Image (tube, rainbow, N blue to C red; front, side, top):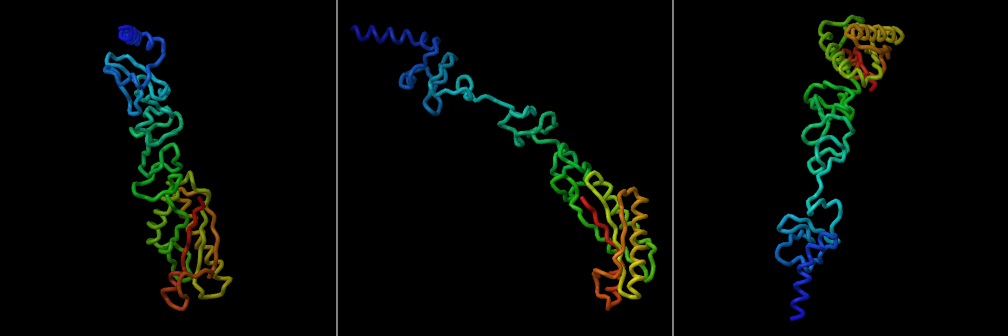
Length: 242
């Protein structure tokens, strides 16, 4: 009889224990009315009260519900943020990743070359992967340094690429070449005239920082013993320093 009375008194004191912050034991949590988490810790009661055992930590949130946080402050909670650590103030999409207006895979805030055409390959800075443009189709007539009409569209395309990536371009060098026909000194001067012809054309299209030089008959790309090889060697190369 005395034991029953003591048990009733203990059960009556449970609400007071909870209010005082003294958590019930896990064993007592198996009584009806208590809510347990997967670790068998008390997190709530049927009446909506929150009870925490010694297993509870602050990151669990109230009643065992995980806290929803936005660590980088971009407006997308951590549990949905696919790009954690985005710098403060950067515009992001629904996944928490920086907006990529030109769709090149590099977020606007890191893109040194915005507006890259869709599908073009870019480097880690968002600039087109152009290190060297060989203008092989700008072939010159024998002993001539005058640009042909067919060269204009090719140079227009080259100028467009360079201008589009102007923020990343550190310089443009134009090198002219010849075939091996004629004296070496003459070919050197002819190659310089060809390089300057291309330089002037590019500058007319808004390209800045262009230097020109001639390499004469050196570095052939074709066989000077054939007509086709000599034609290929009468060329100009454009190197873009990025």
